[in-house]
Length: 352
Image 1 (cartoon, rainbow, N blue to C red):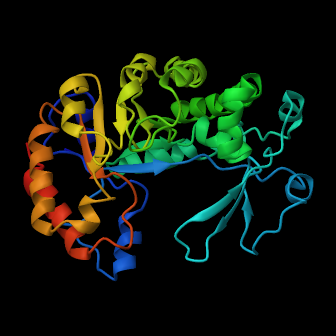
Image 2 (cartoon, rainbow, N blue to C red):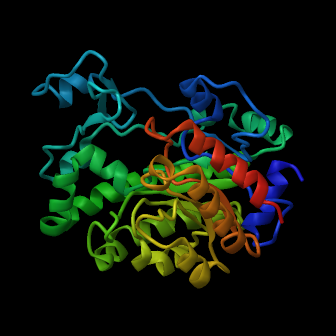
């Protein structure tokens, strides 16, 4: 099987020749370079590639208009949504400041110079790039994580947004509505361009549970997520829909399935039991990820990693519906021996 055939077979809940594998956010070349290692056909096999729309430039005079009260380091960057980001001194994290962080009225949200991120010009050459990857035999996902909630808090600030959800719901909902409209246009571009998977998601949980009450999520974000998926499925009725959230999203898994999600990522093992998710939802959801980057990869032995991979391949992989890989980025505290153990175990135990 080609990688693409393998992935599509697994997403259709059938067993391919072997379990598909993919990294979360890095490329194999980036990790190999970080560790000073040479490429190897036996390590870091990738069955899935990601593509993204081009991004519009920042709104005109964004720094002067929305950040005149702030001082930034020289490396600050402003994105199409007017959000400022800059690296921390260690380079391991970054600061974020949103252009709407002082907003108090709906009129201010409506007056913001929103970029048309879903315009046709930002999808130029996207079908060509997808065809080129298909010709290489890999499956292609359209990357649109940070779909609604994360985009909103980046613009408002996390505390400001969570407060608005409790004290000024119309304000928060107007922000959600505009973001949803723009993200729907982007999703339609991906669907028309021919991606195999549409990747959506928002970090809406921590390791204990949801960041806010599940009922509030159902009232605010669920119908807007459903609208994006429905618009996409109007063009591609069977397009697999990937949804990412770190943490324990167990309270809303049924809701995600209801609105059309078919792939759950990363099924973070420190927060939710992947085997439980497979038992309860494995006939309706593909599990994608499951290899813990918070505990297993940095702190376990190669033997323990091999044992976990063997268990997951035999249980989560049964009947298809499983894509194995790290639950998030492989950080610098992961020993190279553990990375080798991970991919050697996938090679050995991931065969049907």
